[in-house]
Amino acid sequence: MIYQTGQDWRDAGQKRVMLFGMSGLGKTHIATMLRRSGGWFHYSVDYRIGTRYLGELIADDFKRHAMQVPMLRDLLLSDSVRIASNISFDNLAPLSCWLGKPGDPARGGLPFADYMVRQDQHRAAEIQSLADAVRFMQRAVDIYDYPHFVCDTSGSICEVVDPDDPADPLMTTLAAHLLPVWIEGSDAHTAELVRRFDRAPKPMYYQPDFLHAAWAEYGRANPGPVDPDAFIRWTYARALAHRQPRYAAMACHHGVTVSADQVARLREPADFVELIASAIDRKDD
Image 1 (spheres, rainbow, N blue to C red):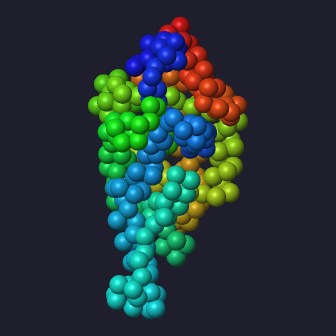
Image 2 (cartoon, helix red, strand yellow):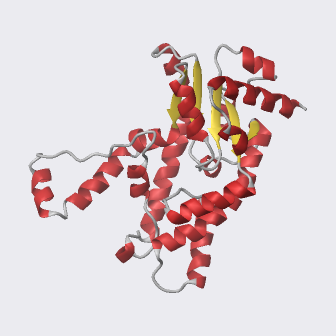
Image 3 (cartoon, rainbow, N blue to C red):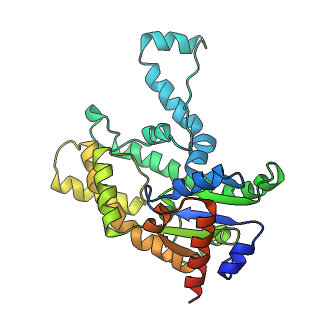
């Protein structure tokens, strides 16, 4: 790790961390708190994915739908309107909408083959966006004069690296410049995430082998056209169990672990600094 002891971390003039774990456990909460303090550059991997790497694909999909509306079609063909996504750190709906859900087109689903193409495009964009974090660390210093840097990763980071390989190229590169911090949830957090997802299911990126197996298993148990929302609800709970050991392996090989309960109690950057210092010293023990 780039900080050998908790005191090394406290004394560092440039604190650099990479937060990872399931969405909804506090990554963006921490990153936003640190950004608002004025001394931290907040790099959002999801935002980078949706703007730099998938922005054109997202906008093209919106235009494709707009072309089906006669009035909008005429305006688009005459360059009278501009259609683009408005992604922000707090609103990733355009990215989620583009990624879509597999299933019956009559219920808003995508054909599974088309869905897998988008999943693969997301994978490539996520890998590149993660790699870009190293370059943005230097930009944060050179251009904006931020001493500290927090990388707010996508929940699917564990799907685009090999967690069990201590020499995974992407994780090795990231860990050489940032301290990976896993925000670990409890069983109670998992149950709440499932309830929250069930109320408002969102598209997600999944590891391809996992997704193919889930699609086949769901189809055997539910013959006929697939309800997209029902499928991703069914898949989400399995994804939580699938990801937990992958996150744990990443933390074991490359970083430290804090709990979601500890994160929920953070009120200011100084609290975060002390939390990470304790996690580093606990790792050494």
